[in-house]
Image (cartoon, rainbow, N blue to C red):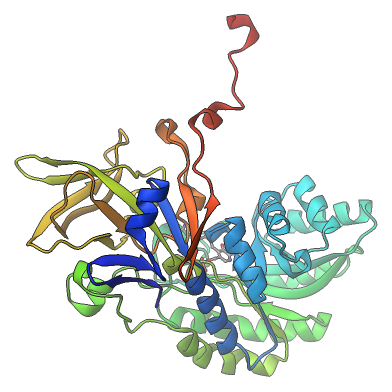
Length: 432
Ligand code: LLP
């Protein structure tokens, strides 16, 4: 559930009409609901309450400083994958000692920075990385806390580009090799074996793949924990969200308020996973990104033109694949609703951006209410992997981001000035 809903004909985020935000701040515009962020965090936190646990929000999903601060205030730790993300957590007032550092390609400077900041754990993805970590820690006269990421080779039933837990993927260490790696790691003097980690993929909408992966890895966790006195087991992120309530309700999306679909919930997830992990007696870590932020954000765009060809009705908006790449990259579905409902028959439409690529679309042949120049549309569920994946293709500035709380709203990131796009560039000397 989330806090984007219609009041009469107008779409609101909490107590603020999105149309007024679009008029105030221009478009494309990302809008986030503080209540949804905090609510999703606390629902998951409450569901996990029967075990000692730490939820580490995956910063890659949404790294806006205000979003991070909302979650830090709610008690969240953070899953980071770069020095940049760690710096953001620090800038947002997050606690580095509640950060886990993941990723297959940690550089020496990144490891050094994270060690100095005393992150809770390094989730290690290869043997050379273990050695590098040990070497850097020795140089700094520190002990690096370590968990090895186990690749359980379990199919997650999600999109190929966001499946991570099979041997076709670059992630983690093959299940069969993990025990040997811990044995070798235990001999490295500047490492402290602190936990075991796994993550099987993203946008997983059923509990079964999580259950299968946990069940497969449990005996190994038990064995490693007994041998090395581990402190935690991280079961990763990957909890899926509803992108398409139309499928759930069978009703056109633009005239109904968000409906719950029978999908994995914190309660259904916990009901299946807690009985498995509780007997371990270990602290349980989780790294959800999308579940917390996905439905907490929308991207608002203005209709610039409606172009009817013989075959198609193209709605050309001022947001593009550089602002939200998920439809172009994953064929992802985002619900699209007008900010003000006008009624009338639905028109089969392609909503497209202005970028010179055929992939620059947000939907194809979708029945949408009739819109015209100057109307606004919201692309819902854009709070995770939305702004963070934006770029400057076609020299388009990064969109502004707004945080809403009740009737309050404020700029959480100013629209990027055009000149900033090339601020680091210069015409080289010999061309002058
Ligand atoms: N932990 C690890 C080790 C991960 O690789 C990821 C996501 C997460 C946690 C958080 O997963 P989540 O709870 O958000 O599903 N850009 C794609 C998603 C990429 C996910 C990458 N890893 C998308 O837009 O769908």
